Every structure is written in structure tokens, then in C-alpha cells.
Length: 530
Image (tube, rainbow, N blue to C red):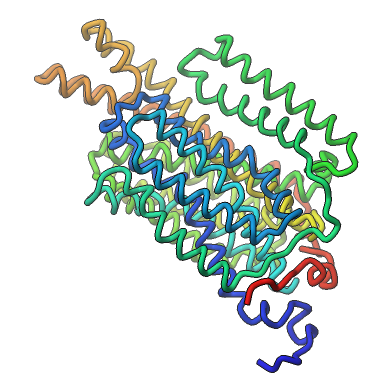
């Protein structure tokens, strides 16, 4: 390309960036998929980890949720660091931390070590995710940003569905640690590609950081998710559970008050008064709460109840990813034709329909019926996620795109963590209740394990053996299925109510800015890559 080509010819984007913008998008999407897979890949590996490391049901949930919780808690400060010091540097640092922690996780010898390394992986992921979207916003002209955001949002969802397949393929041939080890060559390749092709950007005003606000946000999130996860085990009225909810309320209130008093808050709470911002955040939280709860439960249903291998369980979730890839890039055109409100309303109600179908499952439900429920959930998510992401990032200035992207990501990760915790807790509560009778016939030292989780109940059944063991296994599978069905009924209700609420409260058009001006865009873009 001639070196003298003007920015006007490339819609205000520097020519070196404009002509490789789709390659940049591909690199950033692969980075995104890598960290999202790290959330869902373990769902398939949980039975193997439970057997090899002797993890309890609560430890299994924390192996999944420790990553998502730290990820969510640190996204805002990580996004602010990217805005302040450069988003490309944040991306590269995050990739290094993530890769090293994944290597250490693959060598863990007990659940505690694995939980600790998953926590460190969450730190790396928190640096990666907001950097991906904020760099995309800076690399595309304003008229192409809705499509780029839609593709980014689709890959965020696809990562959740591809995780079980990746994990299943590895577990067919290798030990459970291979689920983490596979990240290393991917992360290494991404580091090289990022250094060569990806530009950076930063907030030109060099805004001061907000460590106190960041800490209060982390405390609030930890308190909330801890209580939701531990409630079924410790009791909803136990001191520890109540303390978690109190920490959430007190730290959340303190965060809002503090942010209103300082000159440069990490996130201005008044943004939540902007309908496009608040409803977009609520929509992302809702869809990720339901879909990640779906992945967490349906994977265990396929393995523990229907006896599929990890690989077979992973492939049976593929309809969600396929639907998302097909429909999501068309989301901007759907919204442009019908408006935000009707599109989001129908998206939510498609999700409600899918969960209602899945709520009818029983132990011997044929796969085609389960797929029939998964497909409309994927269609709904494909419309809802791009629209909600554009509402969020279109509400913040481009100079703060790291924090704006982080808010979008926080809602995703909080939704995912709460979905696993909340729907998992609903299932666990129903499972414990249903197993009271069957477990009462066992020796006292086995009763607790039989009621702990379906995996442990099946292990007890194998230990007991004979007709008694067969009866116990059958009881555990029916109890687990009842719990999953109840969780899906709740998810269907959430999506139905969300469709009504968002259909009334969301603005009917995407922010015209997505982001305000080409001049501001080029002012924050720095071509430090060759």
C-alpha cells in the first residue's frame, strides 16, 4: 500500500492498522477463546479430577469458580491498568501469567494446589480480556465496530462451548493435567503474533489509578459468590454464609460511596443511571448466568447419568457453538431492522423456551430432545450478547475503553460464576434432599459421601456393590436429574422475566457513538508494532 495514503481513505484508522484489522481481530479472538475455554473446559474434567485428586463436591466447585471469581474481581483494575499504561502490554503480561500458571496447574498434586493455580490463571485472564475488546475498538472504523463487537461476543460464547470438546479430546488420550498443558503452545503463539501485529492504545490523560475502589469491588464480589456456593453446604443461615452476604452489601455500598467522592473513580457509579449501560450489563449477566449454569450441569448429566465419555459429553454441547457462530455476526443487521428491544425480547424468550424444554429431561431422555433445547438457547444468546456488549461499550469514551471493556467482561464473569454457583446450588439442594432416604440405609460412615454429590454417590455405590449398589446408583442418577430439571426451570423463568424487563427498559437503538469520534480514536492509538 502506498505510504502516503491518508487516514481519510482508511476512515481515520492508521493505514498499517486498518489493512490488518481482521488479522488483529482474529489474534484477539483467539486470546479471548483461550481464557474462556479455561472456565468451561474443566466441567468435563471434573469427574476425572475428583477421582484422581480426591476432591469433594465443594472443592470441585471452587476449582471452577476460583478462576472465574478472581477473573471477575480483577477485571476493573486490570482494565484501568491497560488504559493507563498500554493495552498491548496488559495483554502480553496477562498471556505470560496465564501460561505459567496453567503449566503449574497441570502438575498439581491435590485440590488445594489446583485451586491456587486456577486463582493465578484468573489474574492473567483479567489482564487479557479487557485488552482484547478495547484494542478492537481502536482498530476498526466506527461503521465496522458493531460487526467486530458481534464477532468478538460470538467467540466469547463459543469458547464456553468449545471448552468441553477440547477437554474431552485430551482426556481420551492423556491425564487431567493435559487440559491445562494444551494452553502453553497456544499462549506462546499468541505472544509472538501480538508482538508483531497488534497495536497498542492508552488513555492520553494518564488518569490516576483507584486501588481503594478496586479493593472494595473485589471484596463485594468475593462475599457474594462465596455465600452462593457455600450456602447449600454450610446452610443459608450459617454464620459464614451470612457473613459473605453482609460483606457483599457493605463493601458494595462503600464502593459506590467512595467512587462518588474521588476525582478519577475506576468506574463512576452514575453510569448505572444510563439505561444503555445498566441494561446492557444486566443482560450480559443474565445470559451468562444461565448458559454457564447450563454447561456446568449438562456436562455432568451426560457423564454421570447417561454414561458418556468426556469427549462424547463435549461434542453433545456443540450445537450451542455452531448456532452462535452462525447467528451472532448477523446480530447487527437483525437489530438494525427490528430494533434493540424486540430483538432482545425474542432472544431472551428463545432462551426461556430452550431451558423449558431441557427441564423435561429424565434419565433416559434421547439426545435429539436435549439438542432441541440447546439450539434456541444459542440463538437467543447470539442476538442478546452483541447487542448488550455494544450498549455497554458505546456508553463510555474511547479513552476509557479498557474500563468499559472490563465492565462488559465483569458482567460476563460474574454471570458465569453466579450461574455455576446458583444453578449448581439449586441442583445440589434438591439432590441432597432426594438422597436422604436412599443414603439412610447405608453405614453411617458412607451416608455423608452418598449425599455429597452424584460423583461420590456413584463411587459409594460401586464400593457397596451388588443389588444395593445398583439401587443406590440408580437413586443418585434420578436425584441428580431432578436437581438439574429444577435448575433449568429456574433458568427458564429468569430468561422469561428478563425478556419482558429488557423489552421495556432497554433503549430501542444502539448508541450512535460506539465510540464518539474518529479524532478521539486516532489520538489514543499508538503504532508500536512493526
